[in-house]
Each structure stands twice: as C-alpha cells, then as structure tokens.
Length: 181
Image (cartoon, rainbow, N blue to C red; front, top):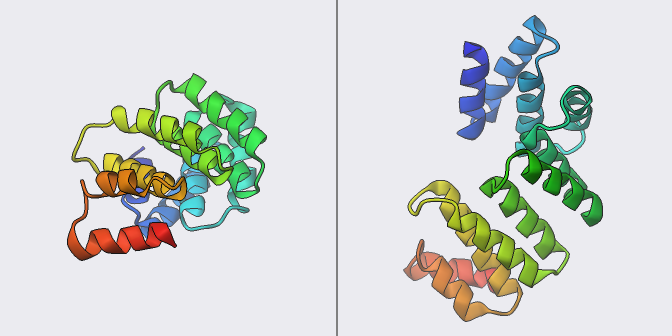
C-alpha cells in the first residue's frame, strides 16, 4: 500500500520515471492489483505512450468496469484515434462512476473541441472550471484550455480575458500568439 501511494504521488507530480518502477514493484508482488495496473497505464499515457497501456486498462475493465480513471483514460485513448463517439461513451461512463469530475469534464471538452464542437466544448470546460477552487493548478489548466478553445472558435477577446487571469505581459502575448497560430 505504501509503494502504491508513493507511486501515485510521483505520477500526479509528473515524476514518471520515479513512479514507473514503483508500480512495477507492486505488480511483481501483487500481479492482480487494479490500482497498480491503472496507475502504470496512466503513467505510460502521461509519457505519451498510447499503445502499451491498452492491455492494462482492458484487464482493469474486465474486473471492475466502473473505475472512473480507467474509463476516462480509455476515452482519451479513443480521442487520440479520432473515434469521438466511442470516446464520449467512455467519458459518460466515467461521469456516471464519478459525477461532476472536473478531470473528466475537461477531457470531454477537449475531445469536443478537437471535433470542432466549440459551444459544447466551452460548456464542458466552464462546468469543469466551476467545480474547482480558484488558485489551484487544476483550475489554471482547465481555464487555459478554455482560453485555447475560445481562441480556436474565433473569440480572441474572451480568450485574452481568461488567459489574463494567469499571464500578463510577454507571457500573455506568447500564449495569445500560440492561440492565433
């Protein structure tokens, strides 16, 4: 349990090279650990590997089809394959398992934006943002995703307003330049 907790802390902190061997150590001792399989899969995805975690998530789903992190991850995997209807099914299942989860709502919004459903994307992102307290890293990430979608949708003044909560001067100009690009 301690190894798993430390691995999860490293994963959430973006220390993937430290998290991976700990998840592997747990799986060596407890090959059926759903938490370790899920954590390892999420770590692989965070590293940009969208193939290797698939069997891990399939194993988790066979045992417990209501784990919101796995359902959310599968939604992301389908999004990376441009399979929006399938992705949305997994995201909806993740929300049924963990209603109003800001991470899931954020991913729904990004998937909708990738498919040019900007109004729906903005609604999902704004809902997610409203569930998170101001001043948290998660709120910043969701709000900056909102700014990006606003800019892509051609609402650059609104994008500037949202991004200016977090950036000013050259940083704001750089972000707006990225949005324009």
